[in-house]
Length: 256
Image 1 (cartoon, rainbow, N blue to C red):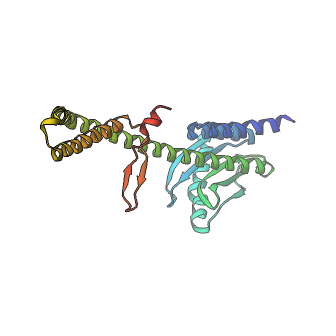
Image 2 (image 1 turned 180 degrees about the horizontal axis):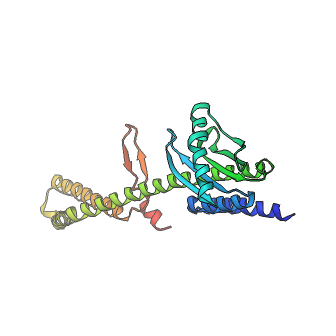
Image 3 (image 1 turned 30 degrees about the horizontal axis):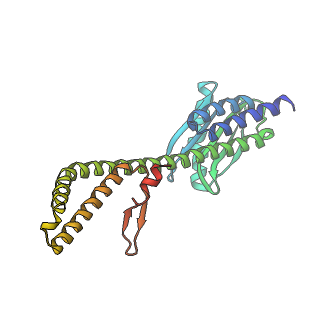
């Protein structure tokens, strides 16, 4: 394997490894863009992410000179962006017979047919862009996957935050219920159990009613204690479509 192949492999592999490791994609892309630009011999390069209306919400650039940057920015603003909007431009390699001659390209950042950004570059002097088209297209494809992976990871993080917030809300509710109910509930249970200790002084219907109240009070106390132990709330749907927190297996889960 010659040096050029090793360099290509290093650039692409570093980008892929950064993406799968969950690193912040903007910084990884900035490093990869500078390495790729240096390898290909670009005077300036940039990547853009945009929304559905082509409004740019993230940009990363690399340039060797202010002049090169200005030329590339001008190409993006007056040519590439217009062609994307008006003619659905996806990719292009172009040569401009200016003085000095320069070459440029734009490649899409996309997943399937969903284009959400582009990589662009400027090369001055000898033209070698087309000879590196496979590398450049692989580079843009890996960037696409990296940003898609970050978006997927962000959704997971949001879902995790929602679940965390839900658990905290349930826990706070349980603490409030325990605080507000525990004292009167303890008093009720204590008095009922004192009365039941003198069953011989009570008639059977009253004993039955007191035992029902005692059983219900103990059930309430048990439910509150289970809510206080809740760490991973799961919902259960009943036949009428009502969703409730499943507390039946909390003790078994906490014993694992």
